[in-house]
Amino acid sequence: MWLALILLVGGLFVVAALRAVGDGGGDDPAPVAATTAAEPTGRITFPEGLRREEMAQLVADELGGSRERYLELTGPGARGRRLAGADRDRSLEGFLFPATYDLFPDTTADQIVDQQLQAYRDRTDGIDFSYARSRNLTRYDVLIIASLVEREVRVPAERPLVAAVIYNRLRADMRLDIDATVQYALGEWKAELTQSDLEIDSPYNTRRYTGLPPGPICNPGSASIAAAARPARVGYLYYVARNDGTGRHYFGRTAAEHDANIARAAANGGG
Image (cartoon, rainbow, N blue to C red; front, side):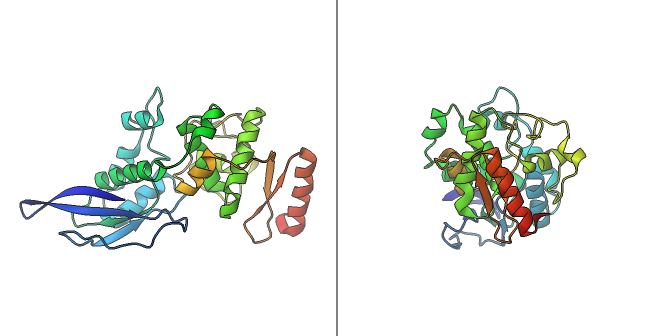
């Protein structure tokens, strides 16, 4: 996926091809050097699952004083509203595609954001959203679900399973009870949440409110978006981390199964 960027070099316009390489999911080709009039001076990599504030810091680390500009560009506005298909301004959270991007001497935060949005369009162009539509979910809903999956899953094979749990709980009008949404509401990815954390009064707190949070909680990769668009056809309503060092979860269909899985996780060292 090539993005054309017009650079002003020595008073002359030259075309520099920029490549966004990979989304970190292991399914993409290795970086390929761009053939340009000006050679890249470096690369910036955005891993999956970062919120836009974390991406802003990576941009600042590479480009200097660009953090505030990146936050300004990606904050609530008309562009986010259009992308989300919403009736009010939205941030670009979720649309800032995680990948590796070439940097050139004149690269700006504006150009990086434009590349991320183009990469999002390119990487989601082939995803089939028809199943989600049949469940009355919009593409923005899918992006929100994908962001939850991205933060919850460590083992790729579990992405469609966790997505299925979310679909099933939405259909059953159950709270999602996803800790990552609480962490987003708090503004930090805390390893341990306190009871007061779980009670934070935020529409992003899915331990208090039913339904999806109002927006994505991070910027997911294409694998999580694909899983959110077409989850596994299973009846799971619950999952809990196994706490056995594998990064996997136990899944259950009933509260009784879930209680048994919690006991299994505790026996593995989950406390």
